[in-house]
Length: 237
Image 1 (tube, one colour):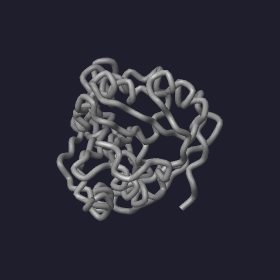
Image 2 (cartoon, rainbow, N blue to C red):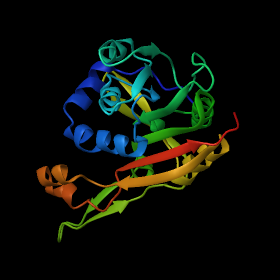
Image 3 (tube, helix red, strand yellow):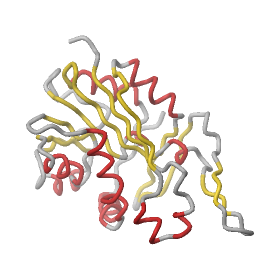
């Protein structure tokens, strides 16, 4: 599969800064699925400008981040130490040195998720945690989206080719970005093959604040928009 192109950091920063759902829904979901423990060491895979690292650090964790964009890393450096790296490679980290790793809105932009799960299982100690917050696969299937009945405003969902893996190219500021769709079962199986044992999975719909701001979104409250998954590393030391 084609390699993910470089990000447009200005576009990404603007998207995150101007999106209240990131603060209201994404970061709280991250903290629920990761459950940071004070003093434990975590890796933020694809840290962007550092909001996830700040949230984990404020919860007591020690964090290091990695990202491809030098500009975003420059912003993230105010929150924690950072390294420039292109995922899924984590070869710059020693084996078993971390208590956990996490990725926020990153998995759907990685072509080789098997390599990402494998690398994470190598750098996280046995018994450590991996947490992922991603756009729900119901959203990433090409052509998926809401259908509004003009008669009564009822909202249903067009699934698109959900059961087929695929990739779409979406605008992302000055560049186009790759969005990889995989059914949920493929994600869970890939993690299991790398040695990750599923602990929990949380599917999240539109948040209350967003529903109040946008009545159309409010009618999608029972349609999953985000998924949070967490695992324990069962790979032998």
